[in-house]
Image 1 (cartoon, rainbow, N blue to C red):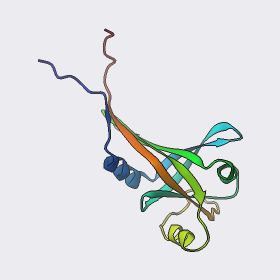
Image 2: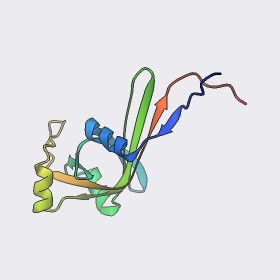
Image 3: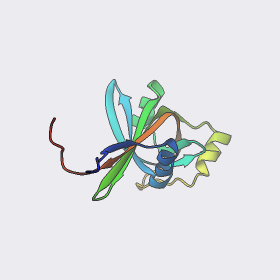
Length: 140
C-alpha cells in the first residue's frame, strides 16, 4: 500500500501566530488610489496585533482612505514551505498610551530612515497553510 501525500495542509491559528512572532518580515497589501500595492515591512507582534513603523508617504496616506490591509509571510526549505496571511484593519497609533506601548515594542527600522509613525494592524482573520514539495501528480 502506498502512502498518499497531502501536499497542502491548513495550519492551526496558534501555529500561524508562532510563525508571525518568529518571522518579523512581511509584505503588506493595501489599496492605493483603487489599485493594489504591496510593501515590504518589518513588524512585531504585540498582544494579538502587529505593529510596523512608517513615515509620511504612500502607505500612510492610503490607510487614511481605506484601512483594510493584508499581510503575508512565508518560508521554505528544500522539502516544504508555509504561508500565513493576516487580514485586518490598520491605523496609526494615537499619541498617549497606545503610541508609548508601540514605541516600547523594540521595533526598529531596517532601513536607515526616520520612521516616527507606528501603525497597528488589528487582525480580523489569520490563516496559514503548509506545503510539501514534490512532483506534479498524474491527471485523473
